[in-house]
Each structure stands twice: as C-alpha cells, then as structure tokens.
Image (tube, rainbow, N blue to C red; front, side, top):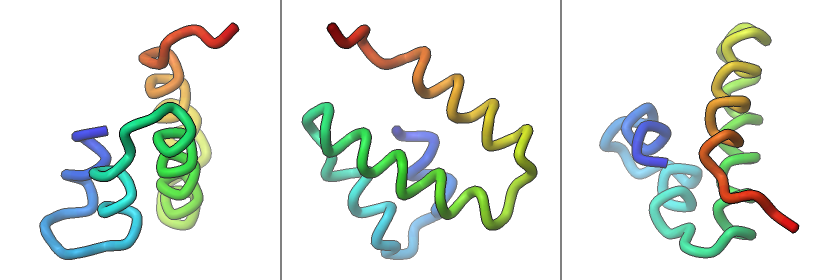
Length: 63
C-alpha cells in the first residue's frame, strides 16, 4: 500500500486518501481496485498485471 501511496505523490488525490485510510480487508480491496483502474489508463497491461499479481500475493489467504 505504501508504494501505491508514494506513486501518487504528495498531492491530495482521492485514491491516495483511500489507500492511506484503508484498514480492513474490504476497504483495502476497494482502494486497490480504484488504484488499478487509474493505472490501467497510464500503464501497459503487463505492468498492471504484474502489480496486481504482486499485491494479491501479499494478501492473506481468504477462506
């Protein structure tokens, strides 16, 4: 999450705020999805896929 926050810089960005304030699994997932949507507009599909895979590998296993 910290890397995503830093990616958005120091300016107040709505997604940056959501990433900082996300504390439970549901809000983390929603903030990450918003970040991915923004990233899809500027990054290649392979970069987006790599970031998504790396992030999901860090999440606890849901049962």
